[in-house]
Structure formats: structure tokens, C-alpha cells
Image (tube, rainbow over all chains, first blue to last red; front, side):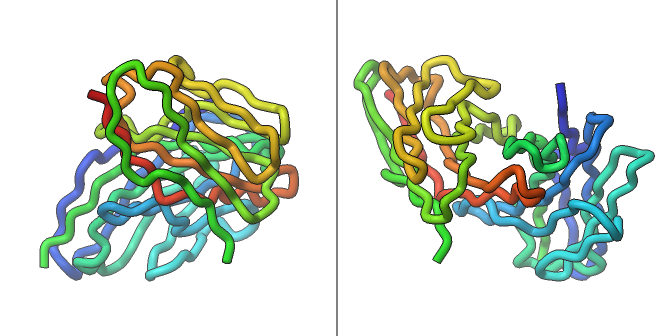
Length: 115
Length: 114
């Protein structure tokens, strides 16, 4: 069965620090990859997505992620975090190259940014 | 505006009293699903539907029912709610089969069963 692992449960950073959140998935075939963000009390919103092409994907709010196929990874990065980035971040995988709508989510990483 | 609408946003109910959480999307998406979100467990899929009259179990279907009589609606039914179904529920919809299965989420329904 496909699965998604997010290695950090809770990350605490100061403003302007750099961020990297790990995500690994288990599926040997074609995948679509996503990062979603959930601000406190809100629903999930798409940060960025990878379908094909350039493995370095840029999303909203200065976030980017790199797909490394050999490592089955899709880590999320931001060079300089802000207090407003405090949220929970979810990595998700859609296996089968888009032939199914099913998304498998990781357990999430809570990011707290200290002002 | 593209959106997924869930109702109600908040619900407190008693054990055993049947309830329905509605979900509606205006994007003509084929695929809809229900998730529950619990601390430390992330989002777990309850049921999904690939199109009208086509539904299937997700990872945690016990105690839930769904129906898909119309493309835009995908209600979640709890026939006899129990306290372990206290959770935050999200409905999502997406297109599929076209290589762009981005999921759009509803605002969530916070359910408390006492």
C-alpha cells in the first residue's frame, strides 16, 4: 500500500530562519506530489504540486519543493520563514499518474515560527 | 468561485442520534472524498466516490455511510454516532483522469459526540 512519511512532527523556528520539511513516499510508479498548508482553524490549501518536468517546483508564498525520484522524496523548503507561516503542513501523494483522484496524506508537520 | 461547501461547520450531538454532514462542489468534479483529521494522525480517508453511484471505502470507513446520487453532492452519514467519531471532518473534490488531481477542500466540520 502507498504511504507518505513526514519525519518531523513539530518544528519550531525563529523568523528569518530557513525551513526544510521532509516527505518520503512509498510507491514505485508514476506519482503526483503535493504540499498542502492548514493555517490555524482553517481548511487545507494547496501550496504547490509536482506532476512532471522540472523537479524543483515553486509554489505560493515563497515555498518550493524538490522531487528526488531516487530518494522517493519531496521536501518542502523556504529560505526565510515568517511568523505568518505558522501552520500545519501536509505532504500528499497521488499514485498512478493522475489516473485516480485518491490522495494519500502524511501525518503532517506543525510549524511554529517565533516572532 | 470554485468551492466545496460543507454544512454544518460545528455540530454537537449525542451518542446514537443519526446525523448527516452535507458536502457540495461547483466544479463538476468526478472525484469526491471524506477525510477525518485527528491530532497526530493527519488526514485519514473515510470514503471516496469516483463518480455518481460509485463509492468505495477508504482507510477508516467503519461507522460511516455515504451516497452519491448527484455529481455535486456527497453527504456523509453517521447512522449511530459514537464518541470515537468526535473529529474534524473534511470533504474534498478533484478532477481525475486528466493528470491534474488537485484536491479542493471544504471548510471542515467539527463534530463532537457526547
